[in-house]
Image 1 (cartoon, rainbow, N blue to C red):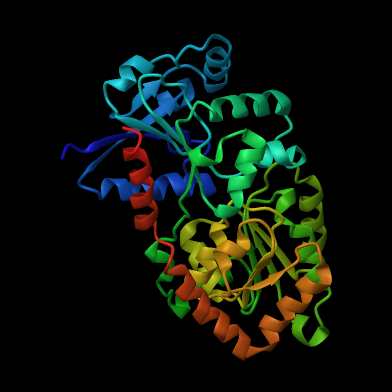
Image 2 (spheres, rainbow, N blue to C red):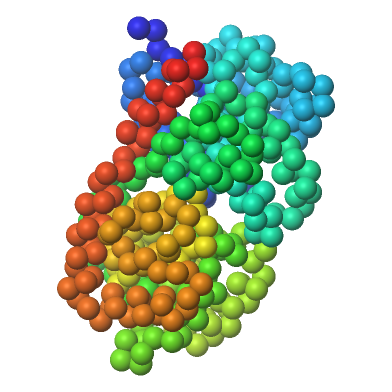
Length: 378
């Protein structure tokens, strides 16, 4: 059988501003396309959109040369394909937009992965610059896709409501966690990472880009409410770069850090991150809204007890392997954090359940299910 030529969104992985510190979309694109490369019946073709990405694209990449915003606006206004679409159709059988950059390609079927509806459903959490225009173009371009992939069942009604996509055009393929997250770091490696970041063993950990929906302010409040016998000598560690609309969160973290019990590490690379997870007493992730929640799987695979939210996709991902709390209830969050620290039996049960839960989520399965969707379009 002739390999399926899959064009995939390589714009983020080619851009120097985003390639070295990937967010959830970047990780998804990287892991999925790596899995494509292991399939004998799939030929992945990187595609970049816009002049900036084109300057840094790999030699074998296909290029749609027009800037995304201009190309999207022109396609919406005139009904024309993106510039370069005809040439691209000679090299690929189907296009998979993995990063919201959805081109109009009349000669080539398009599948788009939409992670969530946050810019439209909660514009107060998104980059405010030209938000109304961007949301309008996002809705329009999403409807160019012949098929849409959601990353959790919880997101399906969100995509239907906010993008106006028919339910029958949506397929759910949950994300995965790489086997390297299950590898046990040596005690000396964990100690070295902790020393480099001025951390004491037994800290509580949050990982994620700082955004209003991540609820980091309430994590700090809950940490400050821990009973003295639990809080004494313990730290709260926040690992994540600042995102949009984070002035208040950053100010809170800097004020809390002055006492030495709260540590904000900004962006941490994956090598150090595995050691951070494994050295933590618990992972605390009370997000208000998640399309999926990859950090929960990473913590599970690392053998770290997890406290997370009852909202959106998080119960779907966590199952019964985590403590689930109302993320707006600071007292409930503090009680859950204290329980994991104070009850070794509970912590051990969560560690075992989390690792078992994580084994059900693999990138190979995600890629296989995704390729089945892409084949159905050809």
